[in-house]
Image (cartoon, rainbow, N blue to C red; front, top):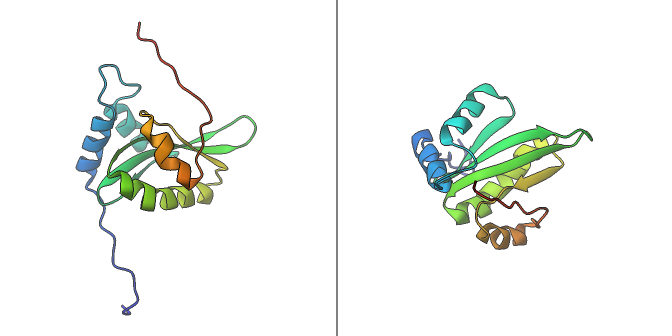
Length: 132
């Protein structure tokens, strides 16, 4: 290995990644469950986890009727600065490699809008919920 070779990257252990996603979904009536994400990851070629050393983002590729492929990124948990500095770069590369033309960061908290704006992300929709 040359002196210029990159240091091997350390990844967040999978058990810790699922715990962080569980924390991100901490709501009396969450829109999804960790068990559902785990099942999707096991059974769908269009699901993936981006893991950093201290953070995780669940990724899902969807195919639209107009032919576009969209990478949905949500939920996410862990170190926001790592997600912004390393995660955005690697997730965008992942999406491009799979033919995606857009990334939708489905944010459960409004702070994500401000955090992602410097990386070129802009609001595209608003999700409103009423519990029944």
